[in-house]
View 1 (cartoon, one colour):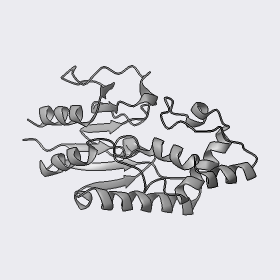
View 2 (cartoon, helix red, strand yellow):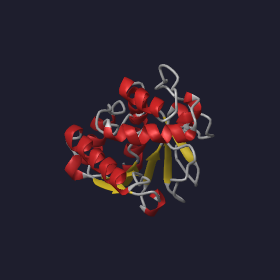
View 3 (cartoon, one colour):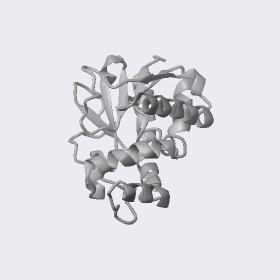
View 4 (cartoon, helix red, strand yellow):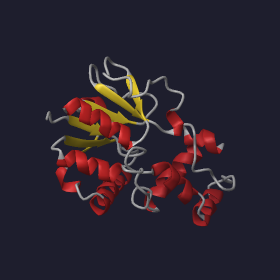
Length: 212
């Protein structure tokens, strides 16, 4: 069996960040803070956003969203969320099969303290929830293309993470539904385009086929 190098995004692919930030934004202490900053947030901010630009879904200024985001880090944005269904067990099986798993996530924020806090919180969550934590690589990077891999898995609709002549898998999420990406059932996966995987079961299927 061929061992593959697999790059995996964190937020939206392993960790449910979108509903977590909505939960925090709906807290009364956060709403009160934002009120003091001159922003009256709409009631019951929706965790089921269907666009990448969350502030558009919530109908708030972009500046207000980033204030919420940085406040949410202190409220546990990267520690209190749930896993994306089947992510932990599936990655565990891929690790057991001797594939080289590399989690590549961008946590380079505007401030040094916020960056360090976000990165340490991601590590804490993985240590607490993923039994394979010490058997994978973790890279904090804005330029994800700098980490060469056989398979790249991400949910960002811009597809800026794609690598040439590699298998690029767009993890299906509501905020990337508009992206033209054929399903992973179109095997073999070729070229520079991205292929859509609906859930971790389909990702495991592709890995198993490529490594057979």
